[in-house]
Length: 325
Image 1 (cartoon, rainbow, N blue to C red):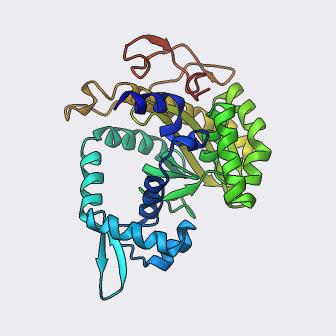
Image 2: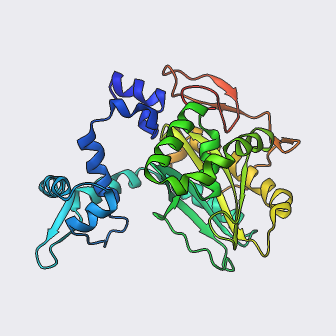
Image 3: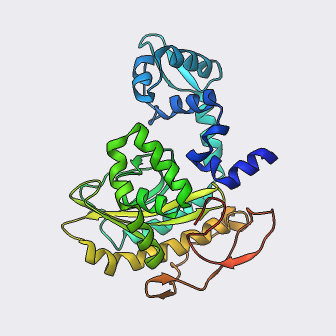
């Protein structure tokens, strides 16, 4: 990563910080907007459909899809007069996923929790106004919850999204919400109304809850974590049937297990540059989180992102620096 890219990353811009929009080359941003339209490997879309999804003029979309096809990122299907994800995009994503045995270890941790709670447990990463499931685990009796790896959920209407924005520096979160208000004003309302309460809950307990926000039948709880790999906050989250788990039960029974999960995942993220890529790693029991009035305390962690040096600092899922809190 060059010096300029490193600077932007530390400011939060490369991690989806809308406040850095002035530094963005619009044609590159729009090209990625086009690629985001293809949520599934088998998705087939024409220029008109892409234009509608992206909110871009059809002429602009036509130029972008032509360029992306020449690059192998898209493939044109003459019979359908549509496009689909191309071999270069698949190869790029596959090569990245191949190096992330980390995800397999995280999946095992998620499954540990899913075997104890009848819900869908996920590990998600932000993508503009959405979060994308990198991994998930689902209890066999998790009725009404059908997320999977690659699924996208809205930041504004999910526990994971509210936890993510609550963890951001207030200026960064404000810029994100302002952009949402310009583009999806109705969706942004619940996020803006709850942001201060979410921040307070995150400070006091280390997690955020959202009851009936995404669906009246689903209650959720989420814990944000800083990821050295992705230079942004990621989130571990769970969705449960509201008929089984009301807000009181979320705090009493679900929160302790999710906080323990967050400690385990944070440890994996921090150690990802060491022996975590070894196939000899074994599945170990979840560590017990030390709590004081429902706060995680006391463990030590290493962050190599800042100034290129190792230095220990107290383990907190939310830090106050460089666009982080």
